[in-house]
Length: 216
Ligand SMILES: Cc1cc2nc3c(=O)[nH]c(=O)nc-3n(C[C@H](O)[C@H](O)[C@H](O)COP(=O)(O)O)c2cc1C
Image (cartoon, rainbow, N blue to C red; front, side):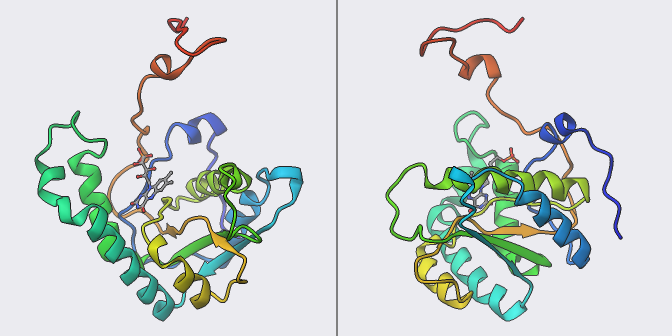
């Protein structure tokens, strides 16, 4: 049995960035099970748990979906490479470093040893903006549990123009909606650094929007 690191919840919350440079080293089955078992402890509306977690390791399936992902990457970001790489850090939300990491992932996605594709059953036609809230808490739990086992993760969606193709390829039910694709692997570059975010004081409002307080 693989033993997880002793990582406090708060330490994990402050040190789980997107890991996009992943080695091809296989992830043992017991780790995959443990990480998924932590994920499914997450919340869903009415505890309905209308979810399915597809573990993808088959290279032919990964290659197919990775080609769709690369299409999405090129359309949204790859075609704007120079713009992202030459921008001052404050001008674009994605830093040049993050861009290069995301580009690396887009090119090497199929090499990640394991992917998890979480799907919500019965959600394919949903127009409810809260739909995702019945799975994204669990997805975040998956990220934190994976970190405890030294496994890097990232939430990706750039395959989405091929949602129906992905659903067919994974043999998901017609009414299922994939909620993201999570490449998993032992990190090969980068670090478990604190994610950079706007200061909490800048995004916190007390009782009404716009009412700020300095952090005590
Ligand atoms: C809805 C959503 C979609 C995302 N799609 C992608 C994606 O397709 N590819 C990717 O590399 N990262 C994707 N990300 C990851 C974000 O880019 C990442 O969470 C953000 O840049 C913060 O990264 P950090 O935690 O390392 O600071 C997505 C994140 C979210 C929440």
